[in-house]
Length: 435
Image (cartoon, rainbow, N blue to C red; front, side):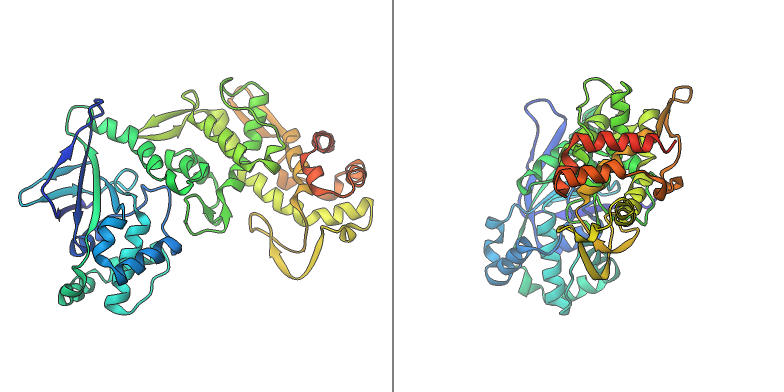
């Protein structure tokens, strides 16, 4: 792999700060010119950042400042927070940094500042508008030489602002790289707290979802990072993944000090599902922390997460089929006030199927959770298995007679269905009868 080292010239004299508390990580504060920013963006990415920048009121405000009062940008902006595994102090206010490891090196915070400055320069130099971070990076890579040449020819118009920059790096002592790797994710999450970083985005940064990602079909476009492009919320996927973890917890196969939730949380508490999932993957008996990332090592949890895609696909299939199943026992599902019939088809939650009938998912969450009746422990191999895979279930054979009667008892209120323990117990019985 080609080494990505970069020499930057800072605007002020080099002054590095060391930790009085003994953490072997240094920080350096200064600012850089737009021409040095152009060089930086060629190599620096924001994959270390738990969020992905996008056009929003923040970027528009930054654009306005650069347009109308660029001399105030240094005062108004926190600038860019950069992490690097190597920072060498050179002469003439220059530094040499490495940007080889996207998991630990790059733009930790200030992604919206970076994005806003970049698209401002592209628009001014080439009258071309960029809408996403990925498009911005692709344009920078493809047209870098043109950007440098065009900027140099108009430099006097754009050297009227400077960009604050803070750089965090190991201090060079023995063990400093370990400190850097172990703490960088936590530092990054803390620096992003001012923008309501979601628990899922923090969990993604900690590496909790890496094994789950490997087990999912890449065609599921999941939004793992705030601002990232995709069509499926990470929280919805994580909720599905918690169902087999709940089964393991109830079977005393997870550490006793991990959080506890019930099946109803899949419907009414996605945030609780994320917290539960994160607490499981964070446990030292479940995963090992290597270079600041949690690497899943427990075979029971590995097999449980391997069931997630089966559950997601079953959810979509059950959603499509439920109106027909309901009508088998009591014709008139379409007359329920919360049920809508559309002219065009709408995608299901996990985008695998389409339906013209749209209804509150609370009607089916208890049935989804009934899938735990199809799970069993293989103690010899220390893993969780399906007695019968959800894809093999003939949904028309499910006896929903009592389930439908209970819906009538709660006056067709989908929220009461999704939040009532009675429906979850009935669903367990329904799926037990499938085996």
